Image 1 (cartoon, rainbow, N blue to C red):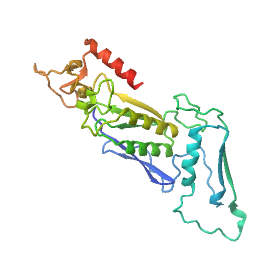
Image 2 (cartoon, one colour):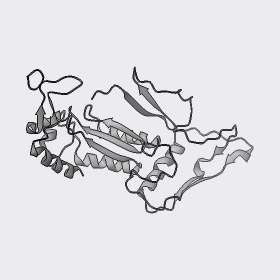
Image 3 (tube, one colour):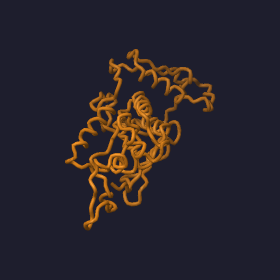
Image 4 (tube, rainbow, N blue to C red):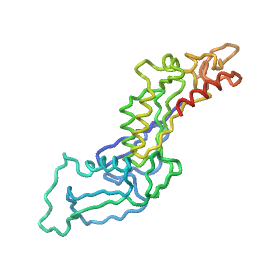
Length: 277
């Protein structure tokens, strides 16, 4: 599969984010948001020229969902975002009538603490799309665990709630399976370019605390060339003009599709999926 586009998602500053679409032939429709626009854009917004000063020490966030580590971590994460230590606070005017002396945010709508975000989760904030995802391909280009977690942080700031993790493809098999260790030993780019089960668990846990659902994808039955480096008996050889092991760029590799009449394909997939489950 040819990827002709690239989504670059980044957090520009603490309170301003933006999605850039980088492609020659697939530009985004519409107009670019003006500087300092609210992102993500709410369904309803009222703008006025009124100005309120907020005292840093008078912001309070409380919840009736206790104990709930997701809420506790969110409060801990956002308190320094509201007023980072490096921000310069300007003295309010002598007229104190426009000073917002306190701000309290209460989380009360859902009395249950949702440990893992589900597809049919209660989106009380009423977003336009229930599934708001980002796909990362760490098979074609290995991405270190800290970088993946930073991407999850950016997703949370942008209210994106599904992380589609394309972890295995033709190019490499970076998942370090305990059941089939040779898959990564021979299929990964190197012994340094692997994800241990502990790495995967830590990424899923990091995403959980951000309210993000993780969908790891082990690409099959096609795009399995990396499997063939340790289990060639599972893969169908591709032929062209009467010659085996022939690749046609954009259509298929020299051997990259599971052999559907090979019983070991099904037993191997069953064992691997049970492991990652």
